[in-house]
Length: 87
Image (cartoon, rainbow, N blue to C red; front, side):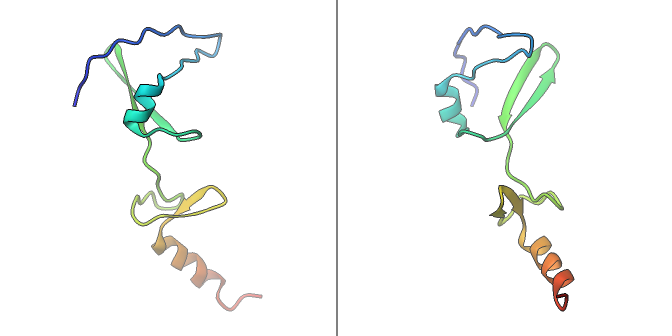
């Protein structure tokens, strides 16, 4: 759904920081420390919440988290198999 809501914001400092309004973050379910993707389309910027993905294969299904990293069951099994029998 496209909703035209204007929230003028000033670009801050030499790094070009921009605050995303709380209403937008809530609507997109963007929390603290979540990642977003930025897309440039002609002269417009699109911001989209980055879905979590497995750090090894890129899968987005049935992820577990370890040390702030996401891993899928298939990759976890492969890793466990690799270490089976090693001391």
